[in-house]
Length: 219
Image (cartoon, rainbow, N blue to C red; front, top):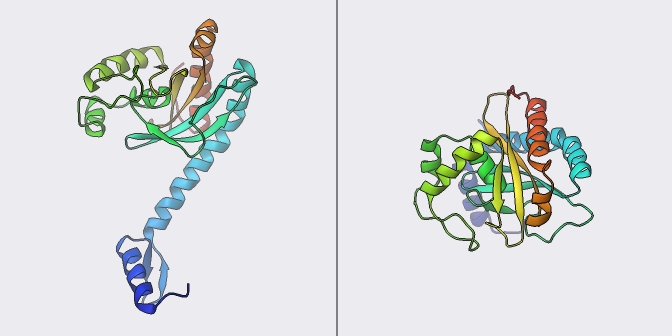
């Protein structure tokens, strides 16, 4: 690295303290336990991507709208996949991007399967930051909305995260029954509402991906 030994020692000490590195009995530096956890997370993401991609491609062909796959991490959704269509609308939601969990269809789909206790832990303030004029304003209103989404099997984002973008999303669960991701279909509101098959197809595709990930969910 062509840096002074003292600077390198400080860097290594920090990485050991953070468990990215460890020292063996010969005082040699080796990869630490944190790397294993990161590797497992990367493998889970890869499994999710590989298992879901065929279903998402089919869904994209059926609906001819933009299709997204994202997973929750804390208060955010991380976008893993985006499949464009012939008339995709411009959006800042690209693979690798992150969005607030409370104002996206994908995030609300995940939140709809969370317990109220977990939601309160994630969103500690009742007043939610407005991303657009349509963003839901309070956590209490969000919790009421999530009950409806849970009952119908899909969530809605009506220009809450980006003006001009209307999304329908459903959650994906693991073999353990935990929410691991969500998929969505996004497009202009008028066009999305005119296609009444979108919610059913999104929900059924999310179910198929969940089953591919080992989950057992009732139809």
